[in-house]
Image (cartoon, rainbow, N blue to C red; front, side, top):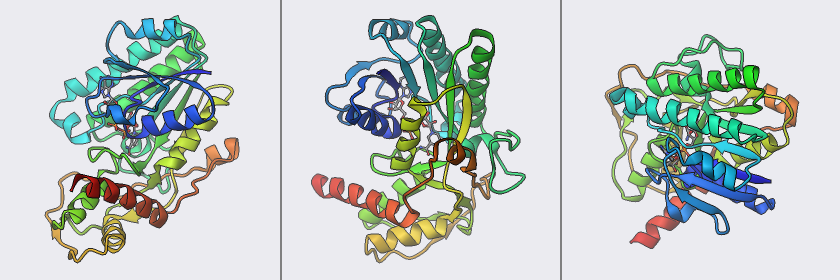
Length: 310
Ligand SMILES: NC(=O)c1ccc[n+]([C@@H]2O[C@H](COP(=O)([O-])OP(=O)(O)OC[C@H]3O[C@@H](n4cnc5c(N)ncnc54)[C@H](O)[C@@H]3O)[C@@H](O)[C@H]2O)c1
């Protein structure tokens, strides 16, 4: 298949690009390199340094006869979305609309969209959240992710566009972006490698559902074979505290750092965890990488790069 990956120079998009290439698909990547890196783009993929809001995007879809658009490009920084909601809206909603309309005009078979479970469900009413959990985003970033889901549904109902929405929880792993939803892993690892003292916000008992990038990639492989249009959580149903993340990383790096706590961040979500029952019953997908193993693999990747830089 001919697959266009937006954000394919970024953390998750480039990992998906590698997996699709390995399965023999033709890959086209559109990325403006605002946070992505050229070195992440797999060999053999066609690469366009372009903003997803650019009118020329539709020409790329047409020229490459694209079957599937896998849409991962986004403004991903929740804090930036709070400081500059207009920019977040522009990239995440207007950019996504440009992607969707280009797909529709050029008869793509499907759009796969990277949405967010944690940011979309907001402060949860029950645990774990399934896909029927009320949508109550607490940030402009969460609002834009949910809005794109709604547009996809609209274009499906009115124009017959096929879509797959994957609602990730906190994705971590090699190449991860420290501004993403699992940013704490990259931030702590980087500090510990530099023998600096990480500071845990508040009591560190706030929980997240951390899903390893290879598991997320496998869900994107399943999405290629999907029939119909639907929305799935991609998560682990395991709650991990920030304190645990710190302890596992500290141990993996054999670091002498103490567990130090600072001020709690106002408005920070206290608990977040999602259910993967739906994607399991439909595709047989379930997470395969435990948090301990995933963190060790992540640390090894950061360590290698750190040693190369030294
Ligand atoms: N990392 C997580 O924990 C997580 C959780 C839920 C959802 N997601 C979603 O997954 C997707 C990928 O996130 P990531 O963690 O890999 O982040 P990332 O920053 O590594 O990837 C985003 C990519 O999009 C590109 N990009 C940004 N704005 C663009 C624009 N206007 N035009 C073209 N390219 C642009 C960036 O250069 C980057 O390569 C995003 O849509 C994000 O919202 C991530």
